[in-house]
Amino acid sequence: MSDIKKVVLAYSGGLDTSVIIPWLKENYNDCEVIAMCADVGQGAEIDPVREKALKSGASKVYVMDVRKEFVEDYVWPVLKAGAVYEGKYLLGTSFARPIIAKAMVEIAAKEGADAIAHGATGKGNDQVRFELTVKALAPHLKIVAPWRLWTIRSREDAIDYAEKHGVPVPVTKKRPYSMDRNIWHLSHEGGDLEDPWNEPKDDVYMVTKTPEQAPDKATYVEIAFE
Image 1 (spheres, rainbow, N blue to C red):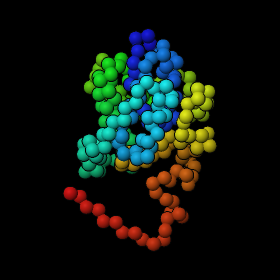
Image 2 (image 1 turned 60 degrees about the horizontal axis):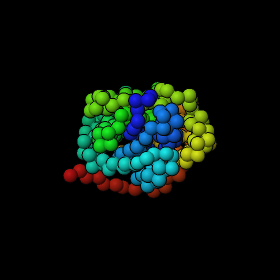
Image 3 (image 1 turned 90 degrees about the horizontal axis):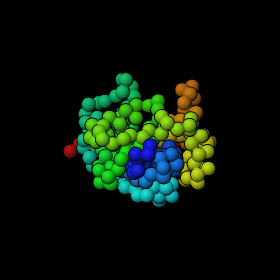
Image 4 (image 1 turned 135 degrees about the vertical axis):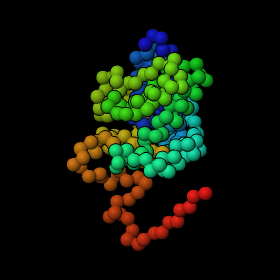
């Protein structure tokens, strides 16, 4: 831990990455934390990122616009291939991780950072996607994965940590979802969704509507590819 003086964090402005900033400073000898947010088409979610990261303790914030590269080198190949995970789960979160990690490595090189950090959970494949990309591009960088290290065990714990440290977060215990949005999709996890017996609540639908809320009149959309 004492070897790490400067960390580049993959920052989204969500609950996990917001509490990771003060946690890194608290546990790694007040190291410098640089927040890096890759714009992959999150839309308005990008707007408050810079201010939130600085308020949470980041020394600098980079917002990297990688939308064009993401669409051309990631979205189109996935669309052409009809790539579906295990035959039923449409790719959305997973294939954006390598381009985010690549942007992180670029900032780490620019800033002379010792390590990168990410908010992927210890149970998920995202940690593998982030870390293998970093190891391929910059194997000398150390990797800090707080979800494999800290004593926080749930999103409720993370909310409590945020409140204790005065960190602004976009969720509450009543609506604790972890969301991932890019130009291709929007996904939710956490809360009551962890039990597949539960149907999604109406507040999950942010880019679509439930059948009950949708109009009864048909709408026709023509899509062309150039």
